[in-house]
Image (cartoon, rainbow, N blue to C red; front, side, top):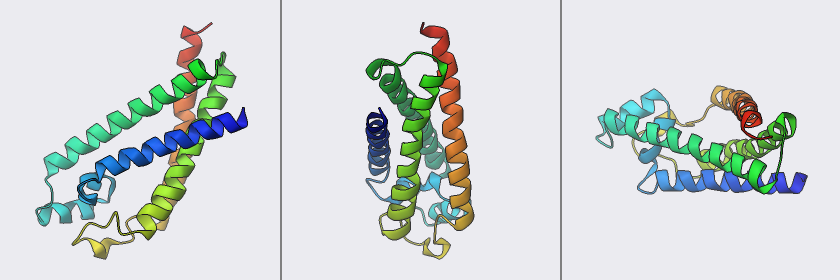
Length: 163
């Protein structure tokens, strides 16, 4: 079961990477909403985007990402794995989401954003590194706690609907 959950988490992590690839297909400015306000303001100043575009893309990313995460973990845990009950559901969902969080923190933030040129927005290089030490700490804490909260809520809801 551990290997299945690891594989399911890695697939969700791959979906996250794919989602990011789609978001930056015309350049990193496509996902400037993930950057600090000063980077966003500079991108607007440079005529690379607008406030409205940033807000719209952020909303689409958040809604699409949350819907994908929820649908994916529910399908994996309850349909594919056949799990029933609160605790097994919570543990499996948290495991999958935790592995995805590891992919996000280590692969996306740590390597892709931190060590490649893919996420550089021309004219904002003075704000690098885009993800500083404090940001990384916050992302680790809130990512892990957030995944636990998602898993708790979904497991609670599913115990109502499944015998």
